Length: 397
Picture 1 (cartoon, helix red, strand yellow):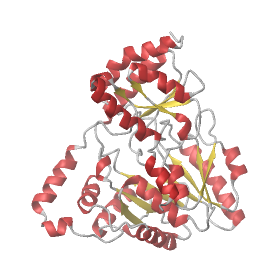
Picture 2 (cartoon, rainbow, N blue to C red):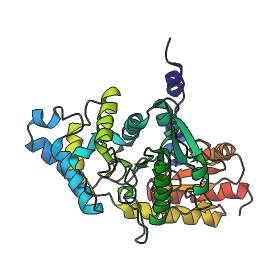
Picture 3 (cartoon, one colour):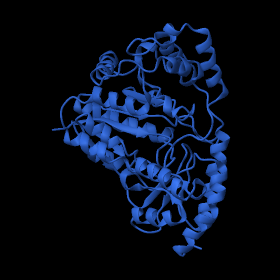
Picture 4 (tube, helix red, strand yellow):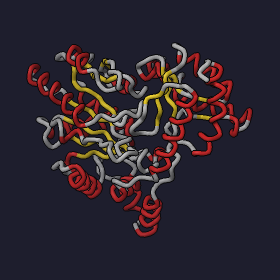
């Protein structure tokens, strides 16, 4: 016998991965030039030059035993202190390395944080739709229950729905800004209103409701007027889950961290629980080499002007074709309204033109598709005629 839930998860990939694998197979059949894969958030911009320079220097100048050996389970102390100092400098939070836990990217950081915060079977974590598809797996894997709430027309949290959903079983609210799949950014006013609601509920229930901020896209914003507030400066009981996958274009290297707010009421106990959850889940330590790379390159990004150009180009093509789209302020996804109610059916029809999108159902809402524009700009330009043919089929042109 095997674990039935694990079997179900292993025998069927996430919808994003299913389409990604379909794209590879289809490319072999008809040629990659005829497949326009907008399914997966795999950065197309090269890592900053400093990343490769740092790797080469570390490899050539550091003794192999020291470079590739175990670090402390929570991460190398110098690495943690360096990143904490940069967070202090950038955001004005008095965090130290003793509240940082280095880990293998965002998925691992979220999984550990959720295990650390789940006290009883059936505890609840609230998310706002649309949300990243794997949140449900992470939450339920920790023995908790995912409560998906609607967003408003601007795809920002519906605070009336939040107030109605809060109860003593809620352990935390999980947010993602800039958002995957919509590209929407939660601004200062949104975070302040969210914090006010959570403070009031925490006081009423006599226990903290944690804000868990999933931040792999923190630096991926494209307009000077767009600001991404750091949640720890707004709400004390915050846990930040960060990944360098997107900003440094290092998704395959699996490096990130969990940061516990220095103002959290139970910060020492919470940090110990994070360390314990990592141990329970079998995380020995994050990759030693890339801990050091992350510390030296923290705050850098690849050439974001490429993503901005792609966003503007794709948004212009789609709206000119008559499609309705949410304008993305950050990340590298565009959320487009399906011209028919069934987004899966729309995605199947788009395949006739070699266009591969992700239907929104697994993101917690219906009637949209996610289009990842972290691709070569030329691929978007080449796809223009395909978009026009698809729009014509729906009578949009």
